[in-house]
Length: 385
Image 1 (cartoon, rainbow, N blue to C red):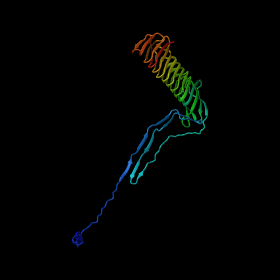
Image 2: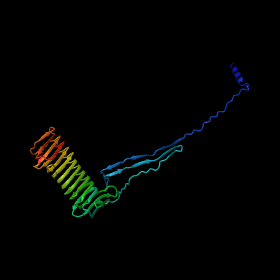
Image 3: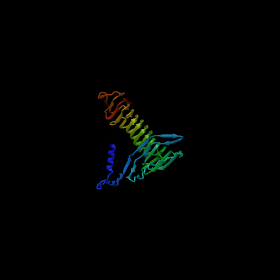
């Protein structure tokens, strides 16, 4: 029965169709227009990368290898005004293009001669000079000795390495002497210079011992490392050192001394004295002055000399003792202050105390001079000779 029904349905479908009925299947045409994606050029504006002054400093580094000395003293690497400049970068898609223009990097000259032989050379020259001129010497390392004579001339003797040069510049007002190296920093140069006693003296050194004898028109010495000694000088005297002893003997004028580390010693001086130290003692002996100021942070202060009427004397230390030796007949008002120390005098005095026992004062004679003695952590001693 099911078979008969199925056959009937098939015959019905396969029968003659109505001519008015048509099944139309249209052609489907889908058009997708071209898609264009435009990516504009990407421009990065000009920019600078600027590294400000950059300095690498190695103060004292020595290499010794098989008899070869290579000194890097006071070696500086400067990157001042270093610029990295990219003025324009274009990136385009499509047609990828990456363009970096030429970049200039400047590196200062770096020269060396490892195989160049080195030997000692003696230099000796004498020339006439105006006795009122000024002597200026700049030396990196070594020794500077200045002596005087009665001639209107300058003699320069120098012992140097063959790699170093001694340059002398002379004008009506000055004689300037420099030590230079053909490559890098000069090695040790030792000077012995003889000048008229009327010439002013100006010396500068990095690792240099200095000695001046007999200059009568002022002395100015500055040193980073090395001893300073002057004898028989006069005028404005200024001495500055970071590390090294400073000694002044048999001189007259106005003295100013600054030292960071090591001792200041002044023996037989007449005139105003201003001495300052950070880590070192100050010794002033056989002084004839109406104004003295000596102060140190970590060290003792010793003074032996006159206390003149109406004079001013101030001796101070933070961590150390103060010892003062004065003549018998002195007219001075004495002020003493110590926080953690004691005061002692080897003669009778009438004390006036203030602030418990931290500060006291007394008068000697008519009290016209002022004598101030201060120590934060140390003793103060006053002695009559």
